[in-house]
Image 1 (cartoon, helix red, strand yellow):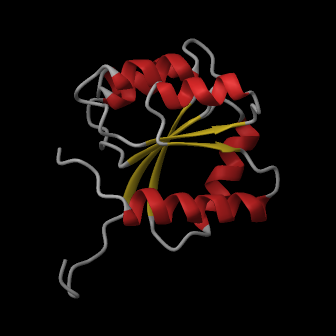
Image 2 (cartoon, rainbow, N blue to C red; image 1 turned 90 degrees about the horizontal axis):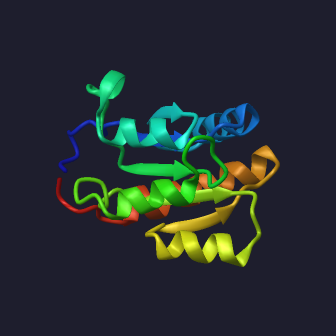
Image 3 (cartoon, rainbow, N blue to C red; image 1 turned 120 degrees about the vertical axis):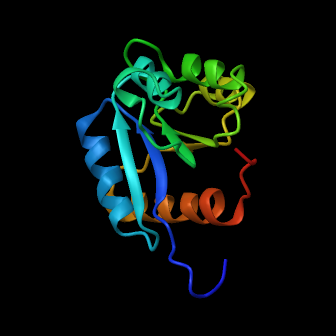
Length: 148
């Protein structure tokens, strides 16, 4: 990228069914340095439809990163991770699991199914902002995604 190029907003998908966590994530991302286009879906079925550009998501942008809750309706986060892992068109998308679970089994299974990182959800905005900045720094700035 040359110095004259405009920085494009980063495409990010949030898979979350809790309105409070959606609001907290949205507010935290507003505080990060990079402009982010955040798409939000509320369950695992919608997440997979979004990622596969099916139905109403046919024109959606491919996210550079997905933030995934484990406790979701219709298909839980582990089921979503498993489908992403076994879909050659999707498995290159980094997935960060944001969860309230402290279960070693939940976290271990998420990593087995291809999660890039598992992070316990902070409960206050300042901590959430720091987590979002760290995610942005590692996954969206330093990491190099595979070619589309």
